[in-house]
Length: 385
View 1: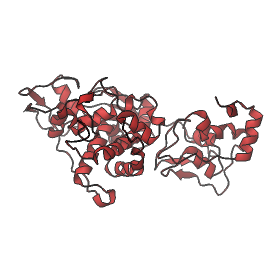
View 2: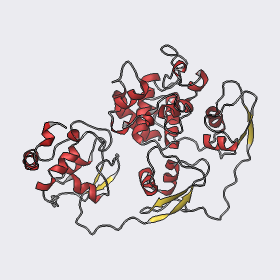
View 3: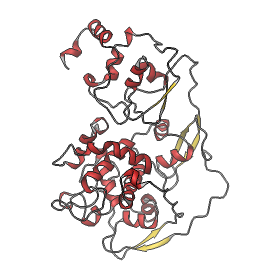
View 4: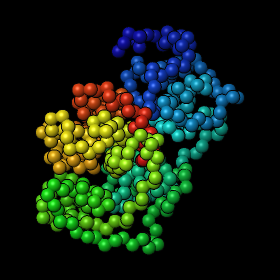
């Protein structure tokens, strides 16, 4: 522990009085991220809170604040002369909570405290569901849905699992399956495996979720398929057409947008937080310009320039964009198992710098390049995700 942190409380309080609300050391893309104690402005703010008024807001302080890129809870509190601890309490947040652009934070606790949000009901996970799709369908955030069910960022959900739906918002659909007839689903078909194909590419070709394809054939992600093998392909509704995108504004062409959407979709399916998806997008831009290239340094291939010779999969697997994205994210459902280490396998990746988190996966000779694309990656995610 640095000597400065061992100072008596009285000295710490006098320092806090002199400095006031400390600005963050540097801009961050989203929310307050866990860092060592000596680097956390939020916790320095808490140490100084005893010398501030419990309700420091003035008559000019607005009732709410809409989070902008780069905002942290401590910065917002300092801007309005409030204590970080109060802003956290008024919004039901903890010191390690993450806020995102567009979130609306309360800046006053004067009103009678709102009762705890009621649970709106429950939802039974259907084949092909993801936390993101369920949250969107019921008009709640993914974080709120995770919190209501005690799930972490790498937690998996399974068909038939019952999820509690947080209240406070009107669900877009009924919270529980209803007895009304469901829309008819096209009949299942079959697919004969050709050389070089993977379960990922077959699922993508037929527009079905990988989990649904695996379940229909009694397979796991680690299962091996062979040319000539006949697979049952569950029926899937025709995919909705992707919304038109201003490619000039994003600085991407159609090929790059298509690959970016795959990276985002795979991240959503696996419950990866927005920051992790943005890191994946920036990494793909640095490594391949978000193009599924069949060349690279040594035997590097694909969106993330993964190398078959170092265990990232066969050449065909590395060239499969969906599988390449899944391997980059890693985690408990990594198609590579423990052979490689993805982002979700990096302990504390959420608190790392943007470039450092990407570099922990890529082990590049140029580790600082990824952060140069941070703001653009968030813009792509906002437009495409």
